[in-house]
Image (cartoon, rainbow, N blue to C red; front, side, top):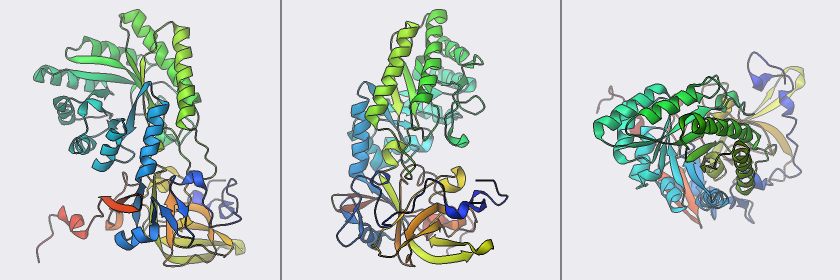
Length: 469
């Protein structure tokens, strides 16, 4: 698709949709691997999740709303825990975190990765054991580091020389030790969007292995009183579908580990391979299951350690999207349907919903693809190619770039978008002073709010110019 000055949505051929998108025989049919495990249509054609019709959830909680399938979330957490039984599995809270989810993570036997003071406070408010928390971030403040050390966070992943110095000073001041891992960049070009590829050299995270910064960081941590070095950490990016990138990263990180052993006389006990495991957003995506990932990644580490003549370190991973992403869908109400005639007699159907880039910025930010389905009914109408857009004052406010929907889609229909568990609520905003939607957990026919919808009182609470009049 050629570039267009107005963006990808206007490029030549865009009206035909992407090459991988096929017109369905039945636009009512769900593609199972795009949805949470309990999602299905009932005999009346209504889409149900967690034993509840989405129309009933909406009747109580309105739209837009994030609907979180608790049983699916827990099952995916267990699948990673069981497949990676020799690893420590950290749920990446940045994908989506609230106190209830933190409790589910703890109950399913996973540890938790946070990357801000806010995420840490949510975890602690949920009663999460701080010894099972890892703290990420490329620019942790002194306040954040002091709090992490004070509460006994299990590992702090250091990301700069300044941070090592800050942490050493805090350990000296408080008389407490801090357990750390050194985040390294392995020079791997992950096959994903450039903004979520994090192991190539030209980006903000970690210490470069190639430039020698990683080895120097290890030296400084080892020389600092009060810092206990657990090992090396590598993360190659997000939405990764195979283990080839992990293989290259593991080879380079383990080579550094061998060098540390030879030159510094230190055997590092642990290594974290990060996360970034992909999920299916559309029919073109084919992610590996946890068991396959575990088998392939374990073989990679075993092979490289044997070749280098070093002991295998204790391993950890950090899935986030792969657990919560498919477990959630977002439900909207259709407000308008507009058919626009373009040059050459071509037409595009715009289906406008009552949310948009304030509750899902990923399409605008990452050029992300999504699917959707009418949730409130089935239809005998022929499928039509449509673009699902939001209500915000931006031409780029697009939720689903291209999808076949029933040709009679109309105002008042409920539209559900699967695969919205990761980063949608976490990155939600008040753009155009929109209210952020609630997160409604469903399980066994029961719905309960785990994050409530914002109110206009919330919206005005930080505006110091508001009066009581």
